[in-house]
Length: 433
Image (cartoon, rainbow, N blue to C red; front, side, top):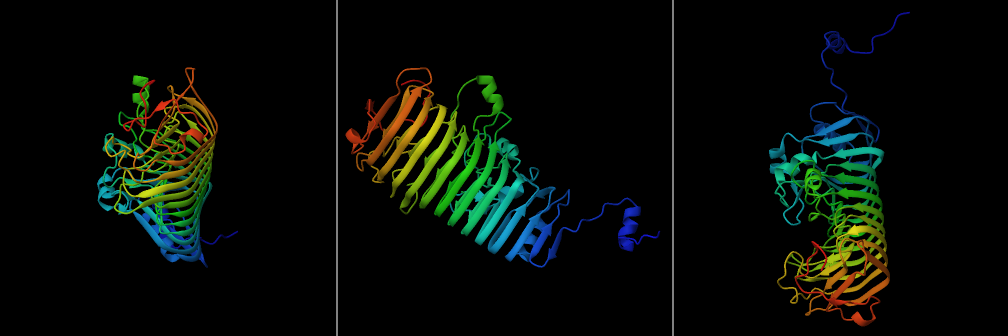
């Protein structure tokens, strides 16, 4: 039987010489673009090509394989696009100076991102197979324990987008924040749903991770988060094993920042980190407003805080926030409220109101003997705090202290204060007080 050759004369000649064959990177069939990993080199050009060819009323499929990301990506003009990722995306670690010079600004706190995704009616699905590897260790070592190093990229930013679904993706070793949303991260965006996500970043060197938040929302409306697991450790593993001490954690698991409204977050498990937090906000030029936020069904393990609010003394307000059904173990200071985060100055000059806040069904163990520390500004006392079914016990036994200052309805809020909370009360403690 005679078989026909399946390759062109040129490709057959190359194959005979055992030379590498170029893979058909992007194929377009009707409204579907299919991308195949090159296996080596830089896959970013073909990824960009797929998003250019299938930017409207289309589907983009990334088949199994490893995709090497060596350049920034900005796809912000998508309309009715479904993105299906079945492979592993790896951000390069050997060209940090490129990233530092070319990452994309996100207009928040001088931060940058490596990938902006925006438009309308976007579905980004990982089907439980997609893995985003940020090669974060090189950034931790470059950062040397610092905070917001210029050019250090947020992995994924949902940017000025509407009607977005992100589902079924695993992150490992993110470079900086895992996600950012802006109209987290989610930024300048509305109607964003993010479900079934798994994130873990931890340093394996002497340098801590620092600021590897799970998500930060900013200038966003109608954000839904469901079924997340987030492990973001500031303490490097060698340091923890060597010192056997609890060190300060400076990243948040789920953070709702300025001008975020109608945020619904449920069924989240956080390891280390700050678990569920409003803030920080109130340090910009305009009013920073957070309204209508629900954190529900959280598990916080070995965290700095569990259900808390941090603001600066600028303009804005925090209103109608509910923390419900929290279980935690070994949390430094489970409930914390401050109008002057990271500073003890101006705490009683803040006029940023914090009101209509509910903590319901909050139970677990605190690392030390303080269950709650809440200092509100004397210039704008907190209003309408409500506590229901609070059961916080120090892990060493005894009764946890509840320290309060300038809460307008303190006598009727449902939690008995045992002392005064000073203006310079820290977010994280280093022992019993």
